Structure formats: C-alpha cells, structure tokens
Image: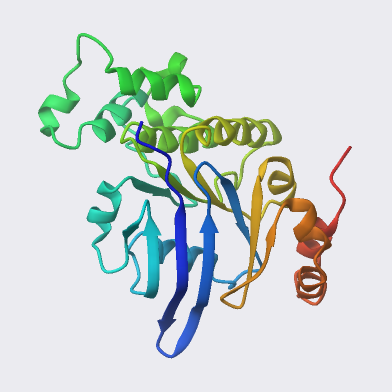
Length: 258
C-alpha cells in the first residue's frame, strides 16, 4: 500500500448551460479520513465527485497526493489511485465473485488469461475477499449475491487495484439495517490505510460512522466539522428546517440513538 494521501480542492466550479452546480468549493480531506458529504438534493455532492474523477469539466484545482487531477482523463485519474462507486453496483453478474476481483486486479492481462482458473488466488484478491467479507462466496456467481454483498464486491474490486482514495455514492442505499452496519464497519477498516469520501443521505448511518462531515448547499460548502459540530451549526439547521424535505431535517438534527 502506498503512503496515505489527502484530497485538496480549491475554488472548484462546475457549470452546465449557465447553471452553476458547484460554486467555488474549497475542501480538504486529510489522509485516512472517513469524510461524509451530505446536503439536500441538488446541493452538488455527486457533481463534485464527478469533477474529481474527470467525468465533468471543472475549473479550479483538485490535488491528490500533491498531483493535479483537473484536465486529466477519467482513465488517467483512475490509474493515479482513485476509484469510485455509483448508487447501483456494477459487477459482472454471470462471473463468480473471485473472477470479478481477478478481472479488476488484472487490468494488464488478456481476457482469456483472466477468466482461466488459476492454481492459486493472488494475494491481493485473497486479501480483498477477506476484507469485504465474501471469502465464503468466492465461487458464487455475482448475480446471486444480496444487494449489500454486490456493493461490497464492487468495493473489493477497487481494493485489488490498490486504490488510495475511494469515492462512494450512497453505498448503503436500499440496504437492510444489518447490511448498513456491516458496510460501516467495512468502511472503517478500509480507511485505516486509505482515504474515503462518502456521499450519503442516510443520516443515521452518517452519525454512526463519519469521522468528519462536509455539508453542501446550493453548490457551496455550508459547514464542516464533526457530526456534533455540524448538527449544532445554525446555518445547517436553517437550511434543513427551511428545506422542503422536512423528514431529512428531522433526521440530521435528531439526537443519535442511545
């Protein structure tokens, strides 16, 4: 594993046909952080991650490990140790869990070589299987996995590529309580030697596992800090209590369960 690196964003701006989706964002994610990005729909959370990963054009600066990411291709950014997931897991459902991980780990090998059963499991693949809790399902088709397990497999596919910054878009959406808990524990393990940024709407999940929180609103950073600090921020309370999503407001401002 390479040395831990942090993410430094300065004056990030993304516009679409005159609409500014991300409006001069400054954001620092320290190495090894488990940072949650929260905010109402349309706040700019996913667009920010799209900019970091090269999916949309942006102005400003995004440094990871001191290297500028803006202006580079999606594949070039991915090769620099940055990986992301989307709200719907993307795995090869007809292939086994082990084959999915093997393909992800073997970007430089031919398809026939990757699909051929190996005499042994590569160390990086075996380690990822254990980390994401799928070792006992290694030979099961990915399509037979439960919803949460597919998300864990996708995270494992990033781990075998030695990704140093994981950007996860609502990783627990649609999960059961037990799956959410297991996912949070997985993210805690991963962030021991990687930097993790999570876009999330599940406020109970955020309160349980976030080490730090950034609240976005109207394309800008509204507040940052610990969960306690963010919940106590009058600006955050004003935005959520004045927002149409009253249920979201109640969730973020609620006291954690005992």
